[in-house]
Image 1: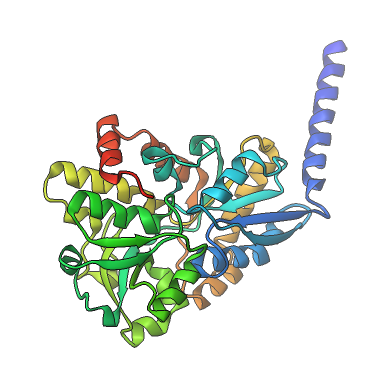
Image 2 (image 1 turned 45 degrees about the vertical axis):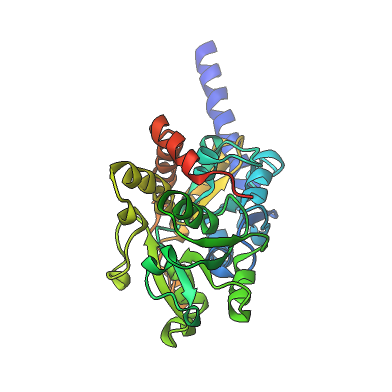
Length: 336
């Protein structure tokens, strides 16, 4: 009788916990922290998620997007690790270079990417390096001959990591100007002639500035990813620019985070039941036809990646062979 009573109590407690979990989000607001600033593909996709994801979360909470640019995406990532509430009401989309910044540089970080609760990713995309058309750079080889002024946000950002690596390892002549708070500011600086170049996602360029492509206002010099984009088959990959095996391995390590796409995370310590809800809702949203239709209007491709897939890529980046990581650190050097 005692065992039966105990079993009944456990079943009842489990049921009550399930009800409590289902009711947690009712009347609450979830905040998506965006590390890249207003405008751009990260921000626009987060806004679309905020409109469609609530219907897949029990309790149908409101979702708002708050941009927290700064420090090359480190500011927002630190906030999510140290200060964000750990009750499941805060998630974030962070630049995919953040794990690489931890592995190679680490300045300013207060986080450990292996301890975040990864939610998933909206999918992969290739990053590109491009210059304003009248700057006179028509191929990546021109960057090894003449200095080009490139705008950047901070040392943890992919828009700085890749040109800095090319300078140190390959002898490229990117003059990197830091201090821009968001990529949209760099776009304006390019139009005003303050800088000549930047790096960023190809899909983001297509979505945010289709006229730059159709009117040939910019020239794409290089792309970063695991394989060439079908639209850019004549544009070399960063990893293809290595002159020997060691350089190829270093450039492959540096290129690896691109496969994270636009990842989403929750802070460490979020209760498992709420984390499961967030992951399920994120996955369902990325397959929801209404959300996908909105993404297509913005010219953003969605190719869902699970939390496990994202965590594996992050782990592989952090645990790359020590000799390659050390050599890559030497190559990157101090970025002041």
